[in-house]
Length: 452
Image (cartoon, rainbow, N blue to C red; front, side, top):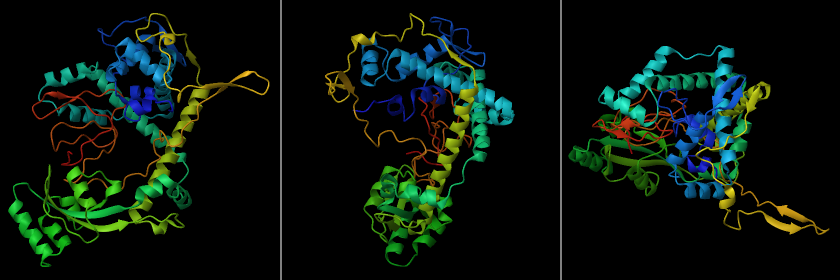
């Protein structure tokens, strides 16, 4: 079995990314009640110190997030996933190094966050809570003050602007690149059998009207697109005859997806209840992928756009990480030795790795000398970010529960966080309808009126 990294354990993010993006409380905590472990400096980046206790707290938070606070469970997990306390520390430090390089690089390039935009984000998040006390409790639960949370928002906005600035020099997405990407098996097959659909959405209390409209459609007395324009409460799709796009470019609610799967082109469903109301669904197109594409024109326009966006995103990401690597190479980075007495330290000699599939095999060469045969790496695991086609149109109201960025989900249905990218550091839990705290989710943003 291939090494299971934190990328698979924490929502497809690496250990350091989990810290920086905000699965756990990795923000620099300057509060007076911040835990004290060993003290000292873990690393310096151009003279800026990264405190050892900050690294330690990040790892302790990760352990708590993964329910690995017990030493035995922690040690077994490390062994199973080819980690040691030393390599875990190294990854977290590298994450903080990158964070500091972003700060320093942004300052050098004159990239700053707009205070009004920072306030907008903070106010939007606070708006999910019934009182200042509930907001404060949510912040405390993740080890942040409001000032620290505000700093995290600022860093996130600066980071996004920096990525945009650096990406200005990224290679343009060409149709040749998009075609090559489409012909990779996992991409072309992801389009195979895709269905495009339209729907008419009624309030849950309006079943009688929905039934009347359905009967008129089935009798040929009413055109589906016309009915959508006249009756659907999903005004966004209604303007396009109810069109909500392709199912593999969007995340429809379960009831919608299950019904669409049973429809052939031209079929009209019965009444389909969901959390949004009552749907009438029709399948308008189906795409069956060829074994190989000779031209992008063989794909629907939406798939062509998705592939171009995927190439563009990949090129921009590559430009950013090339810039970041250049910053690393030119920076004066010093990582100090790991101190003793760290709470996450375990003696890995007590946790031998089980499973012959993971262990390196030993053998002898032609001269009788011992050699080590490393296990084969399995292809296809852990696809890199940006390797999937980018989503096309935004999810339609009342049909989908997808994500669109890194903003935490709001607890109350219909609430919507400010547009754009979310803070890269720890997010407070959000409140549900009665103001009680709920755990924040990573990489989720509420769609308009959508909550699967």
